[in-house]
Length: 259
Image (cartoon, rainbow, N blue to C red; front, side, top):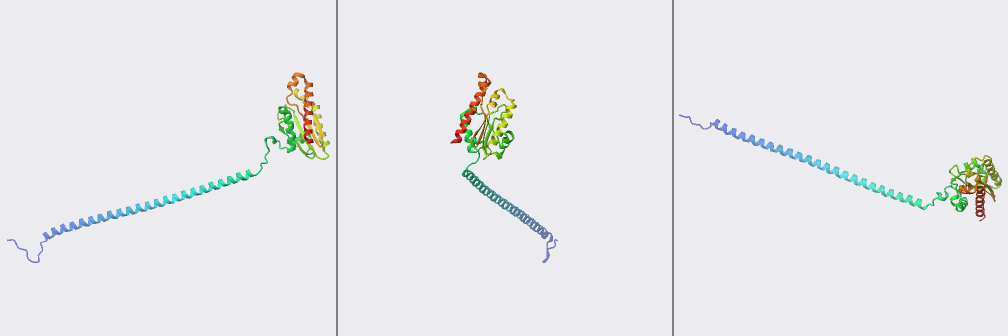
């Protein structure tokens, strides 16, 4: 006969089975709660990092944009200043009268000398062959005329050595006219004594003229193209032709100086 359960006794097997189920459910629920809480915490942490990254990216982007705008503003200001400077320079240059020699004054002659030369060129046209300006050093080394002898001068001879055409106009200092004439005469005489010229130049050199006009001394050895004259009429005709040309030039310069 099965013994009954008295008051105060506990059915441990039954209670233990029920308690095991209860404890199992509690543990499972706690685990679920912990897992859920961990998942939420991880998600919140990730969102926080994303937010900070986005904020930093946004701040960096704004900073870059501000720097770019500042650079553009600076560039624009520099361009405006450069433009103002360029315009100012152009205005300054435009407001000043240019002192560079013109095409007709490349020799650097004074206006008086340039006018005298221009009158000769106008008369002779293409037969005016001198095209290389002479400076003071060449004038002294070649012709023996020093800077102490004159106030002003112009001088040109051909750039090509097989031509001899030369024009000198020298404005002598007070009391130096004869000294200039003597220097030029010495040069001409030495050349005639050692006459080693091309055939077409012999008559030119022999026809050379040195003339005093007031306090000016002229050295004129011109003629241009003499080949046609030499071929058709001979050497003597070249001499006569060049003498006529030189006389014409001296007359032109004399008239200009008298004006």
